[in-house]
Image (tube, rainbow, N blue to C red):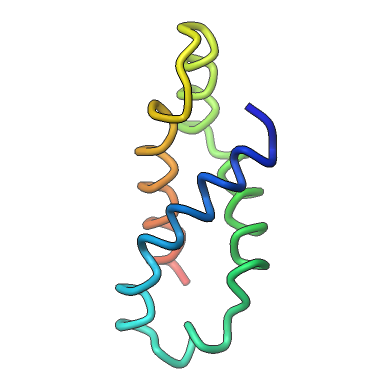
Length: 83
């Protein structure tokens, strides 16, 4: 999986989480640049041990995005909750 593919999954996960985040933090949501947030989150996810284990497993069984999407969504929720 390339960095660009990870970024695309993060972008999709942020998109699905954004309405709830914007509702909880309207001023912050208006101030944040979603492109920069996507870059930041993608970088953090690539360093996450859970993600690395899942990625290694996905590679071992030749799995695609479907295996990684749930963990990326969970990590994006955790990161947005900590903002």
